[in-house]
Amino acid sequence: TRVSPDGVVQLKVVVGTVAGVEVQFLNKEGETTNEKGEPIRGKTKPWVVTREISIKPVEAFNRNRLEGDIKRLYGTSLFSDVKVTLKPVAGNPGEVNIVLGIVEQSTGSLSGGLGYSQSQGVFGQVQVQDSNLFGRAWNLALNLTYGQYGGLANFTFTDPWIKGDAHRTSFRTSLFLSREVPQVFQSQNNGDIVTVTDYEDNKSSRAFEISTNNNPAGRKFEDVGEASDLFPEFSWFDYQGDSVALQRVGGNIIFARPLNGGDPYKNAPWQILAGLNVQSVRPINFEGTSRIYGTPSEGDDDSVPNENIICISYNCASENNLAGLRFAATYNTLNDPRNPTSGNFFSFGTEQFLSVGENSPTFNRVKASYTQFFPVNWLKIAKGCRPKPGEKTNCPQAIGIQLKAGSIVGDLPPYEAFCLGGSNSVRGWYDCDLAVGRSYGEATLEYRFPIISIFAGEIFADAGTDFGSQSSVPGKPGKLLKKPGSGFSIGTGVIVTTPVGPLRLEVASQDFTGEWRFNLGVGWKF
Image (tube, rainbow, N blue to C red; front, side, top):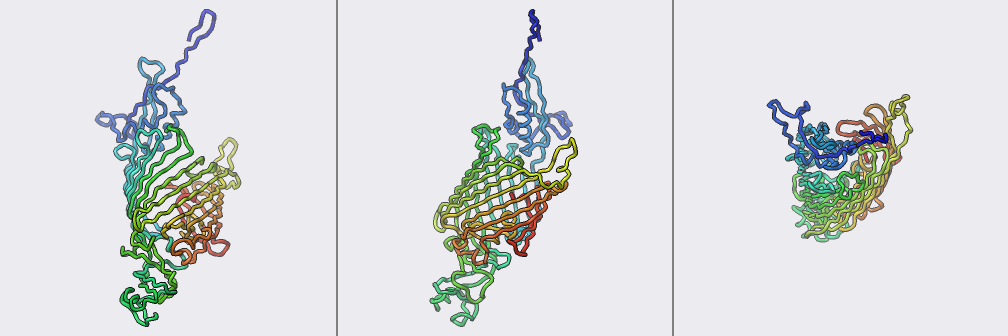
C-alpha cells in the first residue's frame, strides 16, 4: 500500500496463482510418517489424484473450483479423507502449491449373501473385489452365484477413466458363464414350457408321446425315430418334463464417455456408449444335456397339438452364437441420483446382432425410456415437511413419470424376447407373467413422499402392453402359457433407506381384480 503526493492511495493486489499440486499420503490419524519416522507410502498412483484437480499450474486459485475437485475425489470411493493445505512458494509471492493430504480407504473386499429370484430360486453369492487395482483406480471383480436352478460366474474389469483421455472415457470388459431358467418359458399360474427329449415333426395336427399306449399305434416305442419310421403320418415326441434352462458363455467390451467437448471436469448431461457382445447360448435341462424342444406342462400327457411343441433356440439348434454391436445414449438432468425430485432422464439404445455362421441369428433390438420428476409438497407427514421458524425444509417428495418402449426386428430367438411384469415392470404381475413380446410399451405414474426417519412412501400406477406382438415371437411361448399381453396395476409401498440403498416393500393389484402381489425390491423402480 502506498500513498502518492497527491493523496491517492495505491493498492497492489496480488492474485494468488497455483504453482502445482502435491500429493501427500496420511495415515488414519492424519500423520505423514509412520512409527519409524518414514513417509507414509500410499497405494494410489499420484496421477490418479491429480487428474481430478481442475486447477492447473499458473492458473488463478479458485476456492469454488477446488471444492468441486475435492468432491470428485470423494466420488471415486478410494479415499476416506482429503485434507487441503495451501503452501506458499518461497521467493514467489502470490504463488501457492496445493498440497492434498490423502487418507486411503480399503478397496479390497470379500462379501457374500443369500437371496431369492424366480430364475435361480434360493441362491448364495460370493464376490471378491478390488476397486483400486495396482493403484490405478482399476476395478477387478469376481462374482460367483449358485442357486436352486442355476448359477453365474462373472469376471469384470473396469477402468473408470482411461489415463490421458481428455473426454474421460471409461472402459469395461467382462467374461461370464451362466445357467438360468429364463422367465420367458415360465408362468406363475399356468405352468411352464418344459423339456422334450426328442421330436419328429411329420406335419400332423397332433403329436403323440412315445412312452404311452394311448396313441394311433396302440403301443410304446423305444425312441422317436422308431415311431416315425413305422408311422410316418404322425408327429412323435419324447416328453421329459424338466424346466427349460439356458447356458450362456461369452464376454463383452464397452466404452463410454460424456459429451464434454474435451473438458473432463465439465458436468455434461449427455453420455454415449458403444460396445461389443459375443456369447454362445445352449438350451439344456438341469443335467446340462441339450434340449432344443419344449412343450407346455399343463396339457394332455399322451398327445398335444403339433404347434405346442416349440423350438427353444433359434433354428431349433443345439447352440446359438450371438454377436452384437451396441450403441446407447443418455441425457440426465436429475437433481439427485438416489432420490430425485426434479429433472429428467432419457435413454436410447440399439443392439445389432450379426450372423457369424450357421444357427447365428441376425436381428436388431431397440429400446428407449423417458423419466420426468416434478417437485410437489402435498403430504406433510414427516417432521421436515413442517419446519419451525428458522429451520430448513427437508421434505423430498415428487411426482415421477416414466415411459418405456422397445421393439425387435429380424430373426428373434424366443429367449431374447421382451418380458413384461415384475418388480421393475408392471408390479401387479410376477416376472415376465404379463407378456412375452417382440415389442412392448410401459408407463408408470408414481408419487413419493417422506414418512419418518429412514421410511418413505409411494403410491403408483403401472401399465404395460405387448402391442399384440406375442404371436410374432417364434413358438409363441407367451400365448402357450396364457399370458394376457397387456394390463395395469395400482399399488402402494414403503421404502426403507439402508446402507446399500433403498429397499422397497410393495403391494400391487392385477388390473382391478382381487389378485394382489407383494413385492420386495432393491432400489427405486426408476
